[in-house]
Amino acid sequence: MDSQTVLLFTRNGLGDAPADLQGKLAQKFLTLINESGMLPAKILFYTDGVKLACNGSPIIDLLKQLESKGVELVLCKTCLDYFGLGERVEVGIVGGMPDIIEAMSKAGKVISL
Image (cartoon, rainbow, N blue to C red; front, side, top):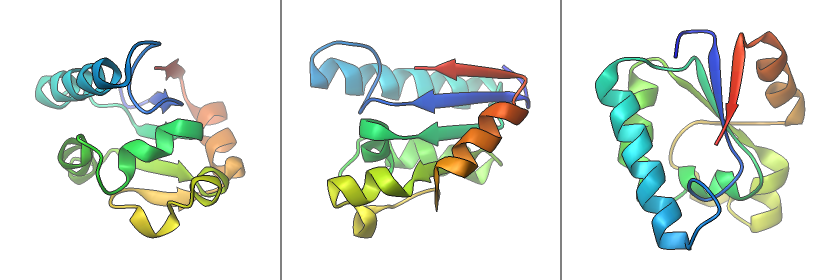
């Protein structure tokens, strides 16, 4: 990855698997990204993906580490409102679909996870 890459989380984890496996895969993936130094420019979260940046998520600390290294984390406000999670956001910025569309259109590469 490089500074033009955007990662897109639309699930509360990675892949189409049992919830606990999705969570473990997301944690492993982000740990390896963090350790490798091959950081994306942004990580976007919508639909169930917004849950990853909210209180109770097992990857909050990883996301905070990535954010502290300059990775911008953008969460969909509509999705947070739908799930009633607006008050539970622990990391990232709350944006709208226009912010997500802009980030995707400016990216050199978008990877949907």
